[in-house]
Length: 296
Image 1 (cartoon, one colour):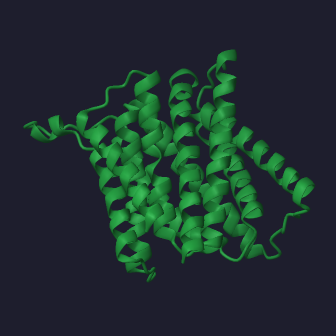
Image 2 (image 1 turned 45 degrees about the horizontal axis):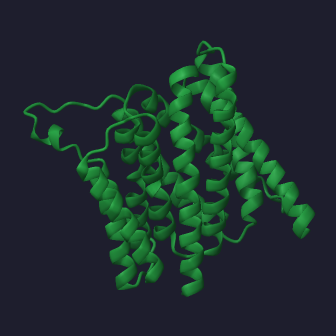
């Protein structure tokens, strides 16, 4: 159990940090060059980092890529890559319309759906302390997204970008539950690499379908799309390894779903987005929940 939990916790933290940094730099890049160009270039560099990691894995550890042998496996990788690309497209569209500190935690709420489904529908067993820790983490994610001023308002205002990001959260929960089961028993590096490559290919196809006018890429933006790709590589390698080697799907999903925490901190420090006292309190709750998870 301890090894199982350690893998899940490390995988979750890797996903949290990787996606947290990627989403922060995505916001900075989307504001300048648009969501589609950010999506395509970030995934191009992400695929490149995956290939470099696979080569390094082979060079230093002698690990070969275990290619899928069935048409069903290849179709599955293409499906998960395309579905995740749609999630990214919706998220980036939402980020381009609204405030990152509000929308990012909305998307992160998908992790609660995954955790609940994993326990209720798929019979995942949790110790009482671990269950409490996961509830605390999810409560923190929800509180970060709570706008007390909006709740007190007489009129219900739809936050710009909320529809897109809310739809992405639902699709992300479906992707996570499916990917968790698809990758088990297979080489995580190989499957993550090809899934991500299919995601990049789907992004290119999307540009041809929607025919969005491309914006000029300023030289200062190249480093941001590289960092986005690197962050995503770290995240997908971490969670794919975790889902393949651990049975604690809910732990990986909720800890990695807390990527709004590093994004929120970066958004406040560098984009000067306001952080409320409630969001600060919620951030502390998330950190406490992760600490209890480690101790459980």
